[in-house]
Length: 124
Image (spheres, rainbow, N blue to C red):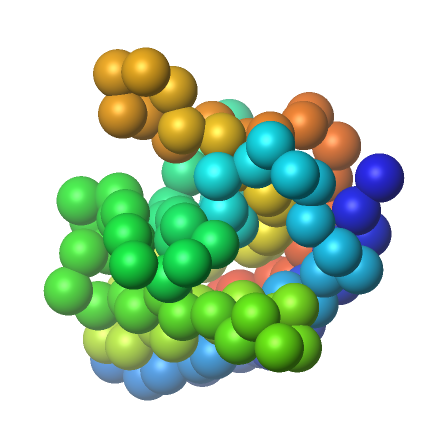
C-alpha cells in the first residue's frame, strides 16, 4: 500500500496563501492520479482537487476553482496544492490520496484509507 505524508498546513488570515505537499512512497498501477480531499469539523470529507499522473489533467471543486492550483513533481513522487485567497470556509483537515476516475468522469479516492492529514485554519 502506498504511504502518503501530508504537510504544509497552518494558520493563515483570510486572503492569505498556503502550499500543501504530499509525498508518496510510490503509486498504484491502476490509479488515475492524486487528489486532495478535506474534512471540516462536523462535515463529511469532500473532494477538493485532483491531478492525473501525467499532470495533463486537473480537476477542482467549484468553490476552489481559480484559487487553488494542483501540481506534481513525478521525480520526487510529490504533489502540491497551492492555495491562494483563502477563506474561512476553507478551514479543514486536508488529506491526499490516490484517485480513480469513474466512467462518468467523477473522481473518487482510490482506497478508503487516509493518513493524518494536515490542518488548515483560516481566520477571518
